Image (cartoon, rainbow, N blue to C red; front, side, top):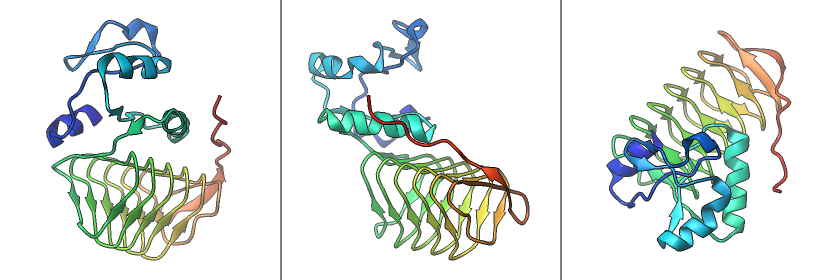
Length: 206
């Protein structure tokens, strides 16, 4: 999906993929070679004279660990917005943001680094999507919504205006969020109710 967005945007030349699954090395994905493990990024970037990379991983914690590691090596992490998305000229996008086909990002919204906005998600005006969060397909965020760092908004979830989702929270698929979601909690249902804790946290860079 990210490859499709990159190719459709026609702004970057694709060299290939990196993947830690050894069985994929030397194979192709959608016509592009899998060049080796992620740890070889620096060497491959030098060999291929690559300007940078785009991270195509949905898991917030893995994506964030890679983002920090890659940035720490001085390699550019490119963002991409599929041309079939609609991003307001008055929205602000951080580094490495991925916006997939059909998504809408409206005026006044601020998106921090390393955020993923998935297929047909609707992000209305004056939202704030914090570092390394992920909005899943067909989720709807009305105006003045805040999504905290590393949080997930599940497929088809709806957040009414002005509500806040705390850091490390998880809003289940189809949930309707009518109250603020506390940090590190899981909520599901209509209206959404807390069902437990979300205990995953980002790992330190090795």
